[in-house]
Structure formats: C-alpha cells, structure tokens
Length: 404
Image (tube, one colour):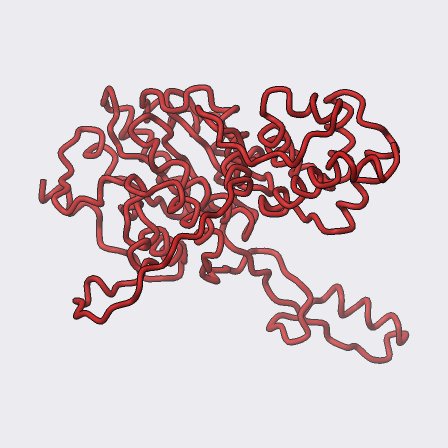
C-alpha cells in the first residue's frame, strides 16, 4: 500500500483524528507517533480488524496502563456498524465522533468519550450591570468545595477527582527505631567511627554520627462498599489512590458482606484502571453490610501484617449494621488497641441533626479516636490535616452518645 493510496482514501486522516482523540484522553501522542502509525499500517497492511488493532496498539501504547484507554478509544471510534470493515475495503472518510455507550462504562471510557465528543461553543450572553449579592458572587470552585458528592454531576465528579489528586498532605513524618548516617546527627555511630579509624592506621579517630530515620506512619483503610455507601465510595477510593501515589505505605480493604484486600489493584498508576480492577476483585460491591464479620476477618487474617508499624486506620462506613451484637463492639475494641489512631469517616455526619441512635453506631463509637464526616471536598481537605498524628487530639466522639 503506497502513501498516495493512504491519502486517496483518507485513511491517514482517520488515523490522525484517532490520534488526536487519544491525546485528549491522556496518552502521550505526538506528530512523530502519528507518522510512525502511518508507516506501520503501510508496512503491515490493514488485513482484518485484529491486525489493524494490534498494528496501532504497537505504536500508540508505550506503557501497560495505557492499554485500557487505547482499547476503549479504538472500540468507541470504530464502533459504527461496519465502519472499520468498510474503511478496510474502501477507505471511508473521517469517522465522526460517536456517543458514549449505554450501561456501565469500563475504566477510562468516560475520558475517551469526552475526548471524542466535539466541543460546542455556545454564544456567550452579553454582560450586564446588575447588583448581585455576595451569595451569587461565590465562585464555582467554592461551591464545588462544599457540594455533596451524591449531588454532583459526572463533570463535577471528574473535576473533584482531579482536585483530590492535587491535594497537599501534611509532613507528619515521625522518627523510627532505625538510624541513618548524618554528619550533623546527635548520636555517635561507633561502628562507622572505628571503620574510619582503620584508614589512618588508628592514629586518629574521626567520629561518625547518625540520626533516626524519619518516615510517614502507614495508613490502613477499611472501606464499606455496600449499597448505602455507593455514592461516596468511588470518590474516597480516588483519595486513597492519590494517597498511595504520594506515600506508598497505604493498604486498602473493601467490604460489604465479606472482606477483600485491594491494595495490589489500587496500585495501578491510572486511577480509572485502578478502580476498575477493584470492581472486578470485589464480588459483593453494592451488596449488604456486615461490619462485624468484616472486622473479624481483618483482625484474624490481616491484623498482624497490615497493622505493623503502628498505622493510622481509616474506617469508612455509615455504621448501619444489619445485625448488632456484642461481637461488633469486641472487634472494634480489638482494632482500636492494634493501631496508633482509629478515625471513623461517616457520610451521615453531613446532617446537622445527626444523632447516634442506630445500634451499630452506638456500639462502634466508644472505640474510635475521631468521628469525622466525609461527603465533599472540604471534608477530604480536613481529613488530610487530621492525618497529622502530631496535632492535638480532637474532641471525644463519645459526647454524641451522651447527647443521643
């Protein structure tokens, strides 16, 4: 196939249009990559649909986590009935952008659909002078900061996810029992000092110093993914993904009717791919709630490994347990004794008239160090500050029990 043949039937235009969509979706595609794709198609020939797919995949995809976005973009771009087959046979004109598929979207599908959708520029209304109150002058950023996640549109959710990825975490490093070489350290390192003295034959001893190693305390998150928490789980997992990218020492467990460790799935660099992997691993997503059973499984199977290093535990649930017995309080007490700080994050606290009347909440509340809301960007920002273990302790959450 010659280059004139490509230009004659607009295949080059289709590939260039497809490359622009990939770039908008987040893949690092430049002019050189487009030329490489054209050369690869010319050298390999189009053949069938699979051959054409893997030819473009070999050029546009340079990292494993980019495969999901490329796969979504390819199938959405060439989804029109017989489009690719007709282009293979007769080289159809530039393929128009297609609407998003109905149903549950896979990882990266939302970003790909937005990249393939043309932007419609609407005529801006003429500005007019009027007296507006301070309430209407509030910026969209301030409104988004306090808007409940359950009331956000898909575009606002995407914007909130990007803001979560840019959150600044506190520098809460604490000294460990290990030491590192430090010329200005307060402690003398005898072994290193004797080793230095051997260089001069013992004529002079140059003291080597060391200081304690500073590390961020580990974080363990135990998240409720039952049906009542579904509107908040995805945003909180985006926060945990950003937290894992910034610190690394983060372990995540999801539960509804059973406990699942998704730490490995959440380590994917792309947030959409990470959440898609979590959805595949968790079989009881949006199911019922068994908090006591999940905490029992965690304390029995994972506590010794996950809670080493005295971590901060984030328990994300609304506390609406199906069956409440003494086991729930016992497991909460065991979890509290095994960690540095136990922080309970409950979306129900967004209501000012919240009272600890549910039996599950009353059984859990005496065993937590902090009881905080998590329903908007402002509450997530407050949580980042609360992760600093050096700050003064918060008010005792047991006061809610006394008020109920």
